[in-house]
Amino acid sequence: MPVAIFLFSLLGAMALGMPIAYALLVSSIALMLHLDMFDAQIIAQNVINGADSFALMAVPFFMLAGEIMNSGGLSRRIVNVAMAAFGHVRGGLGYVTVAAACILSALSGSALADAAALATLLVPMMVRAGHDRTRSAGLVASASIIGPIIPPSIGFVIFGVAANLSITKLFLAGIAPGLYLAAALVLAWWWVVRTENVEPPPRRAPGELRKAIAEGVWALVMPLIVLFGLKFGVFTPTEAGVVAAAYALFVAVFIYRELSVRDLYPLLVRAGLTTAVVMFLVAAALVSGWLITVADLPGKLVAILEPLIATPTLLLFALMVLVLIVGTAMDMTPTILILTPVLMPVVKAAGIDPIYFGVLFMINNAIGLITPPVGTVLNVVAGVSRMSISDVTRGVWPFVIAQTVVLFLLVLFPSLVTVPARWLAG
Image 1 (cartoon, rainbow, N blue to C red):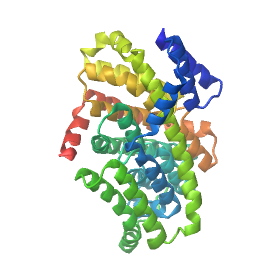
Image 2 (cartoon, one colour):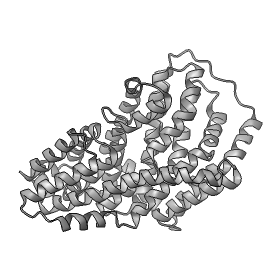
Image 3 (cartoon, rainbow, N blue to C red):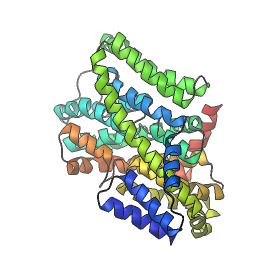
Image 4 (spheres, rainbow, N blue to C red):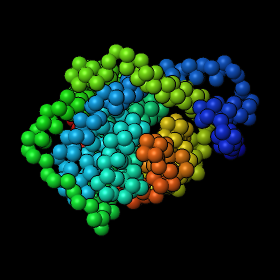
């Protein structure tokens, strides 16, 4: 009964058009009334405690780094380097998109920021080159979801806080799977463009490649600073966010000189507004998480899934299918905040490595960003490219299938995640 009350009140509030953060509070109040323990002080206390986390301080800094990166010329120079290196091969602009997405992922940690940058720069170029418009937008959207997987990742920060896991370990465990997703996109792009009659541009002269690298080196160094700092314990994930934002600001203002002091205010406002949405979601979700624990919903789910607990692989398949379904109707952050406190006890009861599960969970949630009807990345790419959401959705399906195949391969072969993660963690 508590499960039904929580779900129906949550879904009902969302169906009425209520923002998810408020819907979470409504479902929490409904569950408290059912348990005969309503107390406004408990709600207020948990809301405050939900946002009172040192790890969550990384979120505004990574948001700010993404804004600076897009407005300060870092994104454009990264794309130029990829163009000079791969643009001349058949379907080269698609490979440029994937390569640029991997590099941008190590700068912003946000799929939405990467989607905006890549769609602005590459969709018009791909269309002018003769590639199908819907397919080009679909590839850009799919490449953008590498952002939440390759560190630094805002999604991993939120999951680590919700699951009480090491964010640094999650970051390092996400590197190899992010590259697997990129490889899947490369193969899928090769497959879909093999019949296109698109003449690639001529190979850039070696001097042009050297010039592109020289101009983009300041942007290319930034991911290395963040990753090596995390790997060798120079700074925490929160401090990595500060380093990323400060470095991007320094390069944009003093090296590339594409940002001035008066440009900073709108950047700070945009980053602040996005951060406020995320933080309020986290704060509201902690109330739900506390009540989920009080009502022992994880224990009830463990009892339901008990026949599968003896077979971890089968259990993971079931959980991944569940998250895929939820991800089609809900954005990444609320999905993480709602499902993490429910699923983690099941995962631990089955003896599954929580870090490994976290990587699979995040990949699944990232795929949800490009699946309708919600698909926030689809909406960003459609808006920036001035296309209908249905056109972008048609173009994205080959790449969604490729990335979903990678997800279930990682379920079947855990060592693809755990071995690189152990090596990177030292």
